[in-house]
Figure 1 (cartoon, helix red, strand yellow):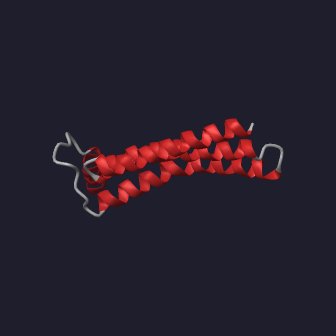
Figure 2 (cartoon, rainbow, N blue to C red):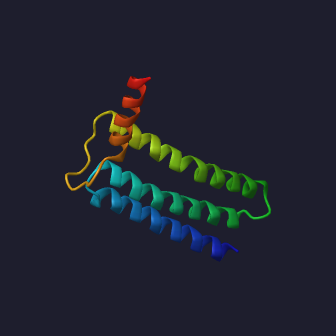
Figure 3 (spheres, rainbow, N blue to C red):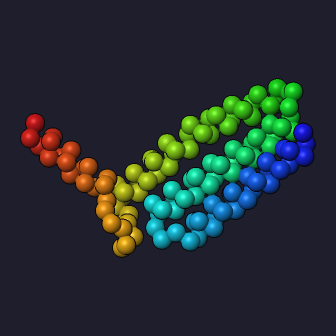
Length: 116
């Protein structure tokens, strides 16, 4: 089981490394958030699963599974909040961006509230 655990840990480290590369390669904060969050979530969960396999049969294994579940639930929410905060602070999209759906939705909701 330790060899399989080591394999999952190495796979997780590779995905985390790809997340770092995506931070350097992507043009703006929004694409950086999206690309790195997916890689970090998969990499970190893979590392934690490797730790779970190392501690199989102990109380630590159950705690690691709880951490994996918590991380899977929290990571998308955290990335959404960071992206929304960046948009509200006025961080611009890259010039090649086709549309800004969040700004369009905000304009529609403001118009609805003004009519009410």
